[in-house]
Image 1 (cartoon, one colour):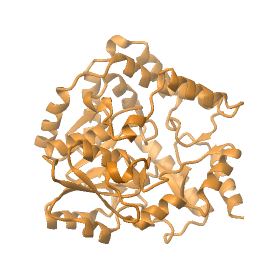
Image 2 (cartoon, helix red, strand yellow):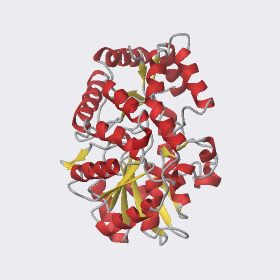
Image 3 (cartoon, helix red, strand yellow):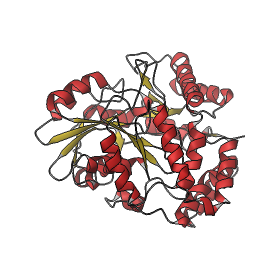
Image 4 (tube, helix red, strand yellow):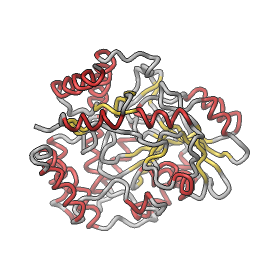
Amino acid sequence: MSPVLISLSPNTEADDLRQAWQVLLKPWQWRQETFVIHLEQLLSRYFDNRPVVMTSSGRAGIKAALSALSIGEGDEVIVQAFTCISVPAAINWAGAKPRFADIDPTTYNFDISSLANKINLRTKAIIVQHTFGIPGPLQQIRQLADKHNLVIIEDLAHSLGATLDGQKLGTFGDIAVLSFGRDKGFSSVFGGALVSNNPDLIKKINQQQNALPYPPRWWVAQQLIHPLLISLAKTWYWRGHVGQVIIVSAQKLGLLSKAVQLSERRAKEPQHTAWRYSPALARLLNLQLSKIARYTKRRQHAAQQYRQTLGITTKQLVDSPGASWLRFPLRVTDKTKVLASAKQAKLVLGDWYDSPVTPCAGLTTYVGYRLGSCPVAEQASRETINLPTYPTIRPDQLQQVISFIRSQAS
């Protein structure tokens, strides 16, 4: 029985494991570009026939988009605090500078007044992070963008499958960035995509991506092995810590990669951004994307269970019917204590995000975040834990999480 582990390949089902095995055992097919073409067509149909190009990761996609938009040296891109370092880092790799705006505490998205105050003559774009799958205030952002002639980039790393007023996220901005990392809503372990209603822009990005080499075969094998090894580790996770030993040992032996390398946390651009998307990983993602409707419905059901049983009000957290709820955020008084207690109860909950830009090493020098500049985001990072909504969580496990949270409040 798989335990409650919020971030270890949470979407993987039996058919995903079979697919990984089948692809791993056929290395002669790892560079068949037809798999990528089919994937791009599938995503294009989902996004109302907008053109799509695959990238090696979401952060590689951000860099590629900014480059194609000629946003670089001397330019600024506004992002929200309470985010992953991958977003501002990718802006840096493109030669531009990130500028941080604060968040609304009930949506974990931009506070519009803070966003408006950050716009200046150097601002060229706004990256809208639909945090946890909760839609950002797109109508107000569009008004600001039109007023100042700014590009809107929708970040769908958390929110593929979500809608706002019946319209799919990713179709509101000028270009959307998707991420298919191991703990995202839909996963090929590594991967990203760009979607736009501007075919010339996508064509330009596609030409850039086609000029890149394929990733080396050892790296592709490393990603294909990931869901298989993690599935084994999850089975043994709480049995004398055997599962944890499997994961750490596999990483040290180079059998498993990390989502964010230590060098990347220290301002070095990762090697995968110089590669195109792997056709081998496209086969994993094709299967995952066939589950968009079912996975989104399950996540929404889990979020509604938390909201109802834990008494969450709209003053605490917005109730957005179209949200995809990659995770369910919850404010607690003592975050460290609650997460530690959860582990004692054999529940691994989430800590997104434990600082306004995570991981926090070198915030000032690397990404330019100044402590105290976004106080609401900083408070959220001290108080917010994440409850699992992943589609493979069982009803009894959901109830176990609810019972645990209630026990912490008593």
